Image 1 (cartoon, rainbow, N blue to C red):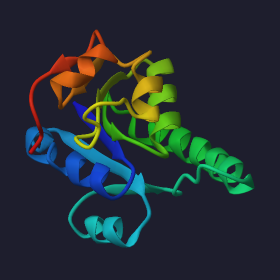
Image 2: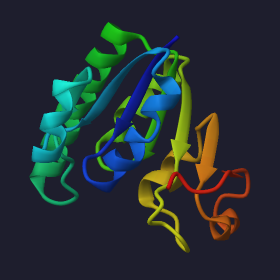
Image 3: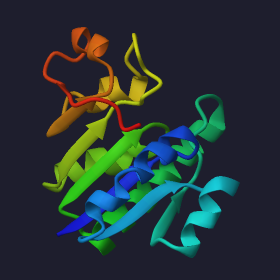
Image 4: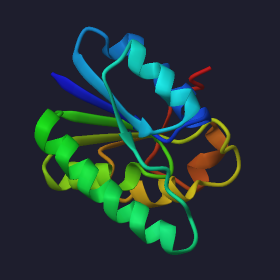
Length: 152
């Protein structure tokens, strides 16, 4: 089974890397944003890079378009059966197109989100096959989510 692990860089990527032992017996790859932190990951893992998703200005639209194209290419080339994501930023296009193409989408809300939902979580919650929260207080925002404790 092929697994796609996708997140933005920073804390989301740190959380995502906690899943590597669980998928290490499968054929897996990582998709993240290019940064100093993520660049070193390519020395030991199969990694694809997206552009960091700006939230404002015309760069938002340019990066979104480029990330949509890159996400489609990755999905077609790798054809994963399951997509696991910790969010944020540039993950939305790959998750949405993955769902459209029949892939199972699993979302894990960020450990940092204790009382309020993330923007990415609110959007992906609508179509995720599995949705996990790391704090029981978020069940009020995500009634169908599963609480299984913290990744830490």
